[in-house]
Image 1 (cartoon, rainbow over the protein chains, first blue to last red):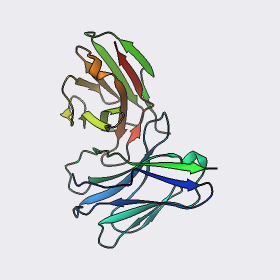
Image 2 (cartoon, each protein chain N blue to C red):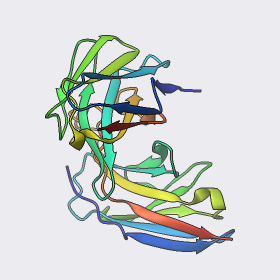
Image 3 (spheres, chains in turn cyan, orange):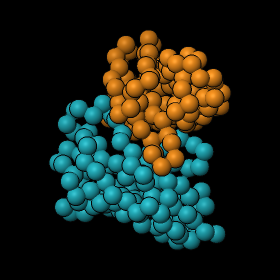
Image 4 (cartoon, chains in turn brown, blue):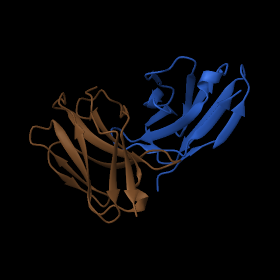
Length: 114
Length: 111
């Protein structure tokens, strides 16, 4: 699986936008970019995913670089409930070999200040 | 709402005991997964299953086995628990390559 690189930690203030970066320079053409987050004392939860185009949903936006070597998860207005570990994961969804497996890295610990 | 439930939130077992961790999902998902999570090591895949009676090793299968006799249920078995298997165990399920839904986790302590 292609590897991702994320900052160990980031901080934000409540109600401000947060941009969480992810580098994936060895991404292949069939790799989708997935983001999950893990709130304290809970299992991870899905946030968003995309292939080439930017994506929006009720939780966040995903901006994907034109060369696909990096992406950014955008939380438009951070709340205290968004404090979590955010994982950027590549998965070969189009290649038919992943069986939906996810390989988690260390992720980014997001701290949100009131 | 998709629901993934795990049999226990907390479990304490003795070294050498056989341990069963149960996971049940209610959304008819084909794929089910077992992970363990340890400080500094993150989440690591132990085993997964893509159909009833089918199982595949993940990244750290040693010391574990699994069973999937029914589509909704995926069991993780520690044949002879050891202290280095003290960890948080997380079960997940997914439909094909869709999003994974995780259970609340079981914190297992082996003494």
